[in-house]
Length: 245
Image 1 (cartoon, helix red, strand yellow):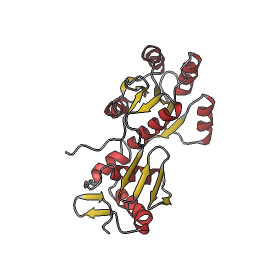
Image 2 (cartoon, rainbow, N blue to C red; image 1 turned 90 degrees about the vertical axis):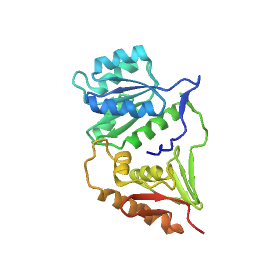
Image 3 (cartoon, helix red, strand yellow; image 1 turned 45 degrees about the vertical axis):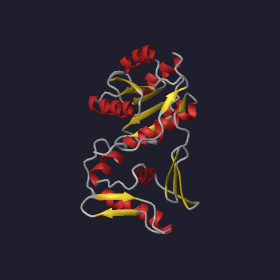
Image 4 (cartoon, rainbow, N blue to C red; image 1 turned 45 degrees about the horizontal axis):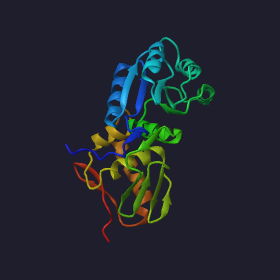
């Protein structure tokens, strides 16, 4: 299998790997997130319980924490309050099965920095963590340019902006993640299964028709500004390439 093109690697100011702590009582999810962040080149530890997270944080001294709100011993909000009281001032991304406004307000009160609602896109979660680290000034990029270009189509990973021939294109979060996956693999044919696995949920068991739907959304916004760039390879999948003059 062809290696997927990777975004610029983030490291600490001293050149050592970013330290990330994953806190979630679902072992399979904790393992998946650990694997994904290690693929980024980060040093990763995982904890299944809130009390274990407090111990790990004191010993490991992470730069960023992914924290499930619903834990079996003490909830994630209380874990974060204790971490802040201990002096941890790094960014925290909450995982939650809830999407109510009151939960977001509670998280902000507890000094959380961002939220991802389960089920989530693994690609989006990694992108959110990278953004939190850049904004926190705790890290630097090994390659400075956050832009991805295919032909006259430009995507900026830091600002979540897309334009074609200088014309801004408004995308939803899912459309952005799908386009980024395509643009990080220009001229490579990606199957529906690969796209579902990479762009949608870690436990997504849905229909491949969702991929067709979002491809059509992208085409309406991108191909409307010039010659077609997103192509279907029948029986295989989709690819993006610079438009032919």
